[in-house]
Length: 125
Image 1 (cartoon, rainbow, N blue to C red):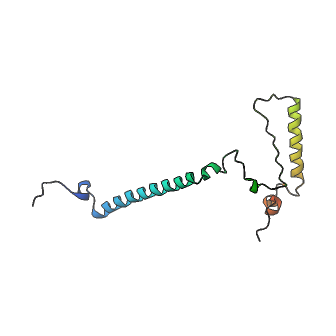
Image 2 (image 1 turned 90 degrees about the vertical axis):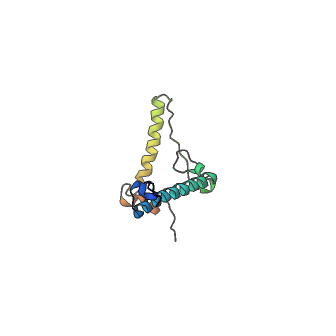
Image 3 (image 1 turned 180 degrees about the horizontal axis):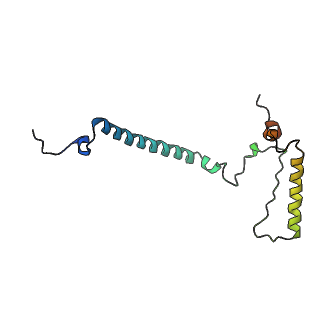
């Protein structure tokens, strides 16, 4: 019949027809997953959202996102600053301000400390 002993198709790997279809399904699904991931990353990069990742330190919000009554307090002490009495006094003064803000809450460590009202989030109604 012209069969020279060579196996063709899935028979050369000793797979059944169903097993061969499963291999094809796995390969096709991997290719589709890689293609869709590549397209989504390309869209993410081209839209510029990659540069506005809010989880990165140093991200500055847009001016529209800032609230007028928000006061930015910066207690950053440089790594190369020398520790002296003046620096310690400044730290204690800033710490006292934070302690007073916490003491203004009725129950600063209670379950309502993270409520919308305490956090200043307006009602969504």
